[in-house]
Amino acid sequence: MSRGNIALIQRGTLERMKKIFDTIKALSRIMYWIAAVAIVSIVILTVCDVILRRFRMPIAYTYEMVMVLGAIAIGFSVPQTTLDKGHVLMDFMTGKVSERWQKILHITTRCLGGGMFALFSWRMFVLGSSLKRAGEVTPILQIPIHPVAFGIGVCFVVECLVLLYGLFSQLGEVEA
Image 1 (cartoon, one colour):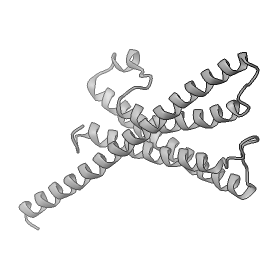
Image 2 (cartoon, rainbow, N blue to C red):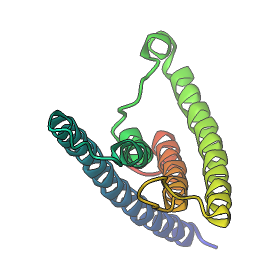
Image 3 (cartoon, helix red, strand yellow):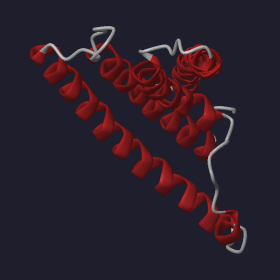
Image 4 (tube, helix red, strand yellow):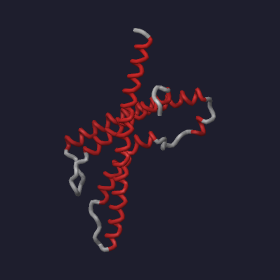
């Protein structure tokens, strides 16, 4: 193969990676909005419950819905928060080392994080399967719980892809 052909193949690969990462970014953004809707729903439901309690008409299912919506809010916000670099950073430590070591730490944390979230995702799918087999539902509304576990498992898969994107960005393979 000539150098020109290799360069074309590399450019094509980079373009495909860019499309894949653009899709991951868009999916993360959609999931972030789902998390936002869940948080707004928690607020509205809680406020309504507190107000109605004053009139001796509490909403019986508030606790279980807040738990389900809270799980959705947390799980679905993780990928976009990572893209936005909204997590706690260890700047006090990484700021004092050379740029080379900063890059090494970044790559190491992305790899470890990807492995952890792959493990978390697998376990959420196992949990979802177990909940589905057992027929687990919420106590009052009888809402199946397994879709939440599967949804969070998908979120963790997307988080793995976001961390992979961060790894490639750090290595300079794709532009951030």
